[in-house]
Amino acid sequence: MQGRARPSHAAFRALADETRRAILEYLRAGPRTSGEIAGQFHSSWPTISRHLAVLRAGGLVVAERKGQAIYYELNTSVFQDLVQHFMGWVNPIRRTGPARRRTQEA
Image (cartoon, rainbow, N blue to C red; front, side, top):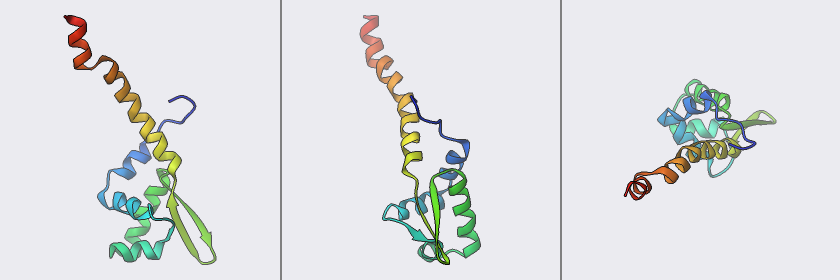
């Protein structure tokens, strides 16, 4: 990944949970407070707080305090890093995939 950091283990850990992926989907619409997030998922504040902490540790969301509220939003640069990471796996397969290997063997 030229010039970009490798995605961290924490980012993959954050993506492993269905609720956290749903929170990320919810945040696609824009920044939300932790209270809005908790209300959307009908979860207790401590549960949502733990999920948000894991998402922050993975770098997938950023938090900004505005008055007494904390707003969470997607950190799109980490998602770009993840896509580039996986494209690094896909591109070699495209170059040496089964179809290309068969034509080279013939």
